[in-house]
Amino acid sequence: MEKRDLIGKDYSLLYESIADNPDLLICRWNSDTTLTFVNRAYAEFYGMERDQLLGKQWIDLAEKGPCNELEKTLHKRAEVEHPFQREDPVLAADGAVHWIYWYNQPVHDTAGKLIEYQSVGIDVTEQKKARRRIIESEQTLQLILDNIDEIVAYHKPDLSIVWANKAFRERVAVDKESLQGSMCYHLWYGKQNPCDDCPVLKAVREKKTVVEEIEQNGIIWHIKAYPIFDDSGNLLGVVDLA
Image (cartoon, rainbow, N blue to C red; front, top):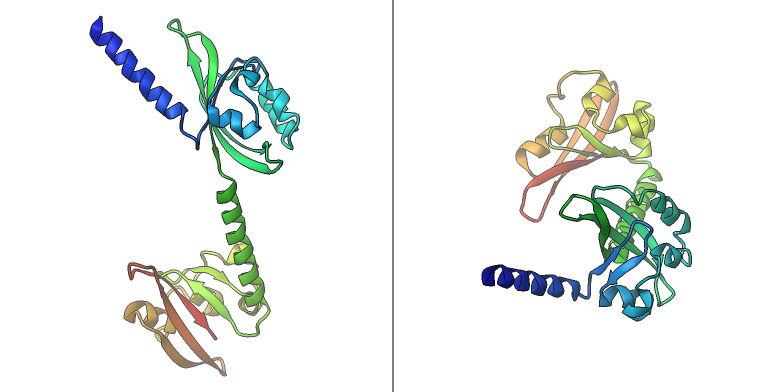
């Protein structure tokens, strides 16, 4: 009995240490979304005392925020008996909209009956902003490349195309969606194997910048192939400019 009590005490201390984590919004709630427990971080997020939140339905809190319809939809799913996740925009006490990633775990009694849910939330607002900045940067880069006359393409080491600019796509008459994963030698010349004098292939093999002039069908191409490496020196691909 003493050993069992000791284990129970250790578990309680562990739970308390997790619940006191200022980066985790933790709550427990019934199937009608009535809150039965909230940690300090959860209460501070909403600018309320913990006792003020107990007995309230988080669906009512959500109706004050921008995710009203999403939360109502979730309310209809509240009887699910398996873990589920969601990512919601939530209006915090500071008046700003924060994105919270929630992991929701059903809790059962010893007979296997569902009694409540426990939710752990993490504020992922900054991560979403960072992802948005990356997407915007990629869109800006694509816009720049699409507005230059030179043909630009990025290839994997196996020569398959990851992306190419508008000049490239127009030259081979292929749209952006169909381009990805295609082989340049097939698009340009209908071949099944790389060209013998391919600067991109040479850059892959030699792992250095290759500059070549190639004549194809009466046209002289001045081509530069630049190998791209990661921080560990591994070859990621090759950018070619013609």
